[in-house]
Length: 367
Image 1: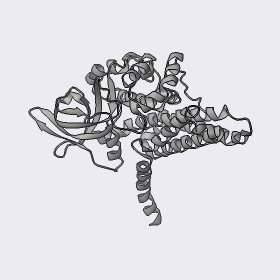
Image 2: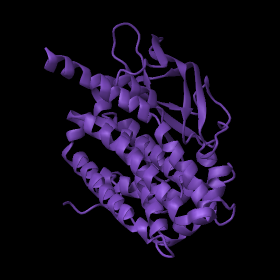
Image 3: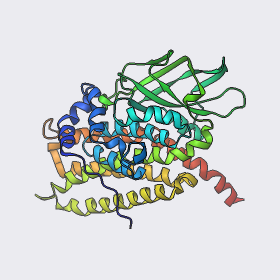
Image 4: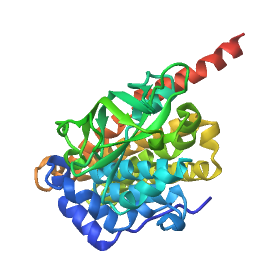
């Protein structure tokens, strides 16, 4: 079995996350501080080639980083996912000039990078149409539409990747839009139950003009399958980190009549490690580009394991979990695990995509 990637966070960051996790979850007070804190620890440089300002390695290193952060705060892990996914788009884009212009500030946390491609991933899976359209005009592109839910739209400035339907018979493409674009409007932060410091908002795009120099790739259907494994793999990391934290909390309480929980906790740990190994090996071999179904199944499985880990933690904690102060961490993790299934593409959408892919095969087998 391949040795799993593990990232040890700096003590200063772990301490800050533990001290502010509740605040990050329930208020927007630390929204401005969160991105720079992650950047100071060098986390956005994980899996980025050294020649481009990174620490080298593979996207699996970034996944291990998101998991490590998510053990302390899923809201922080969610912001990390958005920033690092945008970085991955820049790394995999053939537009080197755009990459070279945007990457330094995004790696350093001076600028937020957001992935508005959740709609595009659903488009790729045949779940819904694209929500942004474009027309050619005066040597530029006019872009109109909306992104109803995007994370890491930092108020001080952001770039957001979006899939855009081209006019005529031209293929959809992926471009980077900017908070400074005239006609691009960010809503106020969405009134979420939790994840309040994640700078999650909607974007309206009205007559925004961009040049072809802002295009990340000219053919979305060709490019998205190549970036989807990192997109979903980094999402999986959030569930992985949360599951590991709940298992650790359970382990610390296996006494006073609760030792009966040791066996299910250890079984869950083994299943989690096996699934992590499959994720890392699939990303290294690029098999998920050819067979995304396995990645969909892993994403669904990680969500289920995180939910089970939190429930075992509840059994290990007992009634203290419902007391405001001693149960604060558990109550946050309960909210966090409720959020994982609805991160786009949601578990329902992934299961629907799997079902749609299986139908032709079933028909063929019956015939």
